[in-house]
Figure 1 (tube, rainbow, N blue to C red):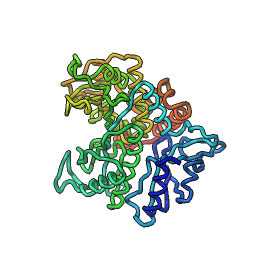
Figure 2 (tube, rainbow, N blue to C red; figure 1 turned 60 degrees about the horizontal axis):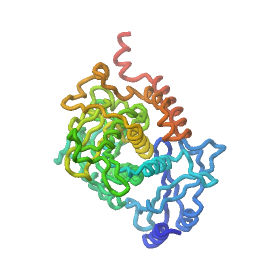
Figure 3 (tube, rainbow, N blue to C red; figure 1 turned 135 degrees about the vertical axis):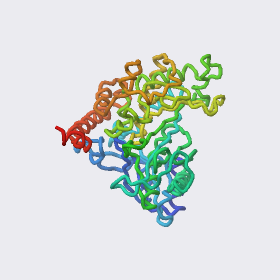
Figure 4 (tube, rainbow, N blue to C red; figure 1 turned 90 degrees about the horizontal axis):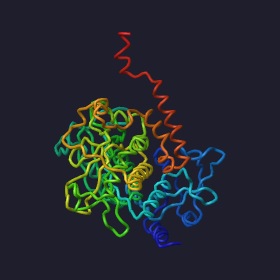
Length: 445
């Protein structure tokens, strides 16, 4: 037993932990869990705990259902919203088959594999996501709690206490927070996590989403990460700040002598070019639902344009310039993803695209500055030669289905499952008659 596992066992005893929840996600990013008692922990570390994989979306058919969950001791945390007496803790798990091999349908394994590939090329991948969400009165509707706006700190910001309790809970679980504030939309909020390595951050994102919902429920309201819950208000994004560091701790994106003046290294420029080139192929992963494309529709403030800039927030990739001379702060911000994405798969596919750009030495197009792309329709953008993300889930899944890079990154199991599942979702949506159609057509056709 290693020191981390020994620490877990001692903490279970000293903190009066009576249940340990094993956490993992299905392919779509839904958090799954089952609990064991402390006396089973040593065996779980050594041999894993069995469960029925056929009950988990995207895992296994019933004839190949047996799976093993191996807890990762480094992710052990006591859940602060549960009672201190007879406490409950959690650990994220790696999923394996009965013969001890990593399960190819485990999203955490996909990300781990991609991070190993980056390490083989001399890089460590750091990310810092900004996740937006809405508070509603309950889960059955979209009645808002306030009419506040961006950065409001008045009586309009009804949810200040909810954000405070959420931040404190996250910090108790070892997840540092950089910012929290009211967002642009009424009753919309954002809590930004301090950057970390991608695997730790993917675990943190799953924890964050649960904590936000748990604290909201404790206050008698509902929190939603739905990409576009309100037609006439901004959607929820998950802007992903990211950088590559060398294994000796240097920021591979930073070059103070960049002749273009952007302080970006050739590595960074090829990486951005890879993101822009492959974004349509990974769009199904970063924007995985029918509703995701309502947020990306023309006339919204979510970028769909394969472009980059330093200060233009209507581009898909932005180079934050808060501390332009700081090597540690050098990074890019991808603004198209939304918080419904599975973070393990999203981080893996984004990294794969960036590394492919470096490998292929893709040239970086000129930046798009001083143009508000939000004022242009997709058709106008294409007329100007600016490519866009897929218009809807149907287009996204077909681009994804043809992508060699996505198949290589995710593996046959997950790639094939997502193509089948998302085609079914799109086809089912296509049969729905919406209120808009009835309002527009019923009385006149």
